[in-house]
Image (cartoon, rainbow, N blue to C red; front, side, top):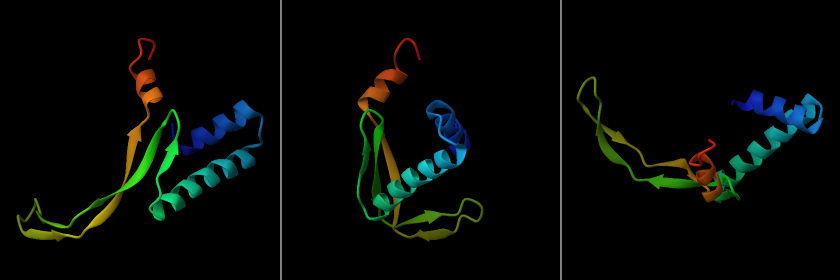
Length: 94
């Protein structure tokens, strides 16, 4: 499922116009992104949580040239699956 599929399904299941569903999905993703950008954790009970992990810089190797390359420190989003979702994925019906 991609974002367009999600918008269409929300529109269909909730009898909302497509434009309102689009606005709703975009608002949710925007607010989640803003919270993560501020360093806040985003938790959706029963689904999972998102947080930012900090990675230190290191010296890597360019696989083509085998030259040493400095990789700068970075922040990346990390998703941790919730218990209810984990159970659903591993149930006999899934």
